[in-house]
Amino acid sequence: MMLEDILISEDITVLQALQKLDVTAKKVLFVVRDKKLVAVLTDGDVRRWILANGSLEAPIRKSANYQPKYLMENEAENAISYLNRQGIDAVPILNDMHEIIQIVFKKEDLNALKTDELKRVPVVIMAGGLGTRLYPYTKILPKPLIPVGDKPILEHIMREFNKYGCIDFQLIVNYKKDMIKAYFSDCNLEYNIDYIDEEIPLGTGGGLQLLKGEICSTFILSNCDILIKDNITKIYNYHKQQGNMITMVCSAKNFTIPYGIIEIDGNGEIAKMKEKPSLSFLTNTGCYVVEPEVIDKIEENICIGFPDVIEKCKMQGMKVGIYPISENSWLDMGQMEELEKMELSLKASN
Image 1 (tube, helix red, strand yellow):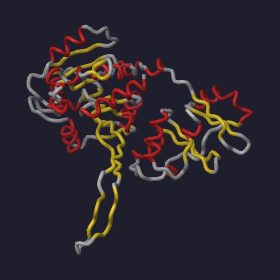
Image 2 (cartoon, rainbow, N blue to C red):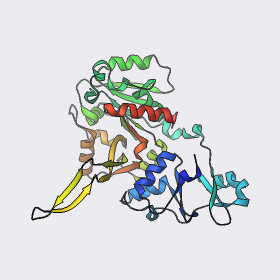
Image 3 (cartoon, one colour):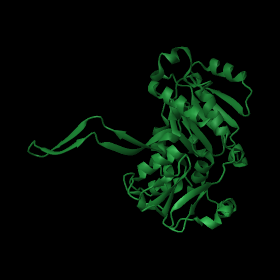
Image 4 (cartoon, rainbow, N blue to C red):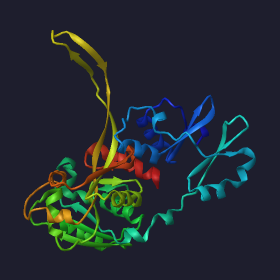
């Protein structure tokens, strides 16, 4: 990676910065003006801006930190100890003109991602759907077993959660459930799997009522066709710190409308034209952190989606929040065209 890859100007938008953070995978960008360091922007800065209802189209100078930490060239040999003392992921090295000549990164310890805290957090995965959007694949295989690379999507999902310490998985199964059980019975896994048989389709929310009395602590809920490539521990801790009943993991998306948009005035004349405008918004990824009290709010034998459960909880005054992640931190296998994209992304990260 070139130094220029993580340098940005003050005028790019929050969304553009988020996309650049995705590409560099370094969690930090440095803002320069006339080649001189003026600010730093981390993924945390972007997240706080979004949670404060800041616009994705706003320039990053509104969310960047204009008191960046740095070392001068003659202090470069102390960079690693400086990173550890300051608890930061990267520090720029400056010359006498305050231009960045080097950036020293803290090495990521993958073993440090696992926490004892998440060992106590069960992960519930809705793995019983018909997968109609993936027909005809799902005529042969249940959606959780459709391969992405050399492993089925469900195994990728559980491995990603296990990377952060999760060891207990509850799979709510229905369609072709015996195939799912047979596959994982032959796998030598580092975690535990329990199966909850759904006799009739209950939806992504209704199936949770089968766990009444079984889950008595905060848990993670995930669809079986999505993969979250973000720090699960941070998501869980944010949920607890905010005192949320439900925290929805949301992805920042940018969608370009492939047509020119016409607005007309009251006289039927053209008031404004926009050629292929872009829309920026947050979308539900299908992953949540949930308190066990939510399960008690779900009626038995009623088919309901979890977004509808959320609406009911909100109407009852429960606190529901979001945790924003970048677009590339959410891989969606629910549609045919996304399969190849997911496989390429997983190959790149391994």
